[in-house]
Image 1 (cartoon, one colour):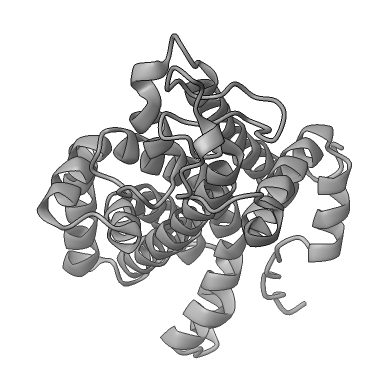
Image 2 (image 1 turned 45 degrees about the horizontal axis):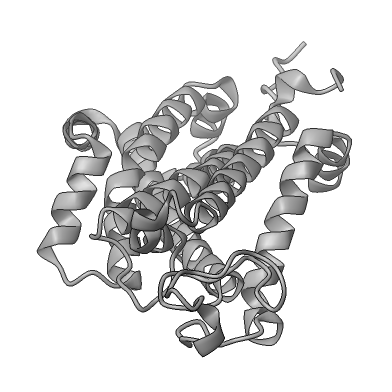
Amino acid sequence: MADIAPIETRPAAPAGALRRLMRRKLALFGLAIIALVVGGAVFAPWIAPFEPDEQLFEGLSLYGEPMPPGGPFLMGTDLLGRDLFTRMLYGAQTSLVIGVVANGVALVIGTLVGVLAGFVRGWFGAALMRFTDLMMAFPALLLAICLAALFQPSLWIVAMVIALVNWVQTARVVYTETTSLAEREFIAAEKTLGASQSRILFRHILPHLIPTLIVWGTLGISVTVLLEATLSFLGVGVQPPTPSWGNIIFENQTYFQAAPWLVFIPGAAILLLALAFNLVGDALRDVLDPTQRGND
């Protein structure tokens, strides 16, 4: 009997993966938080009762102190009399734009480096991975602060800085996956049948990397949101008057004891959004892992 060529295993179907995801309560909780934040950011111009930089006369007490939550100010006001709820909505736009853009660029760079190093190999692949190891040796926050200090901080500059320090983890994971896939039997069978390098790469290697990239893309947004908030808090991120959850804390930290909501509310928003993306990312990792199918 003639030998049968090994059959390629394929990633989970999107419909089946979605059904498995919907059965996970923590994932649904994370999706609900993400949907709430995204909805608030998208519809901020219609939801916000004031302009984000509008300094309201009634936004300060007779003693010049921020107003507490209640009345016309759902989340209170800041030290300049601006409505905190409005600034939180517009700050969500900043966090999400930087999270998606920076993480998307980091994902593209990391995927390109990892796939080339794992598929081409040889001295070229070794050089790429040694460069990746060199980048991983630098503390991400310190490197981001140094890069941000070299340029005039703005929303897009901060996004690019974060992308330049966050691609290395993706590159390492994609390299490991690509190296493993390149040694699988169905790839050897394709080579025996005379398939070109481009066909193997685009028809067999990259499709199998999609679940991994989805998971890392989701998890990476939480890291990006936290890093952006940290940079803004340290004064080298998004600069006022553009609202950001990080610089809201930075601007109002001196009022922590007198007006704790100015620090607690944006801090809680940052942690909840990061937690939400982590919950969804962890659930996607389990749902898209072929070894976990049938265990739900």
